Length: 157
Image (cartoon, rainbow, N blue to C red; front, side, top):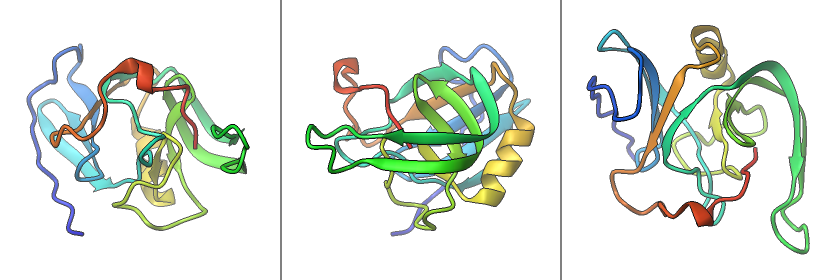
């Protein structure tokens, strides 16, 4: 798979600042914009089918150097996970967050329970750049990701 960064410095509808994070679910890329310029881009891993990363416009509401993440979404809990010290965590949509992932390096492909996973170095950079209140624009130009909000629970790592 070849991921393509498609820069678009146009402020997305609903974003009310000149600094924002764009996440392209189809290309599995993250782009950071400031003052109409692309300042950073990298590969990510968003939610797997069934644990989609919800498209929309959000704001970072909590920043944590590290956090414990755990949960299960299947009735039989066969998908249970427990992760200590998840680094550089930026919560933006309920339990969904942008964060470092030390348990895989398969960036560029969906792998999570709804969060947006980044490499440790990318997550650290983003954590230092972002502030609480930073806008997060999540989109899927392919139209494959469901847009019905009823499809989405709280999300997870």
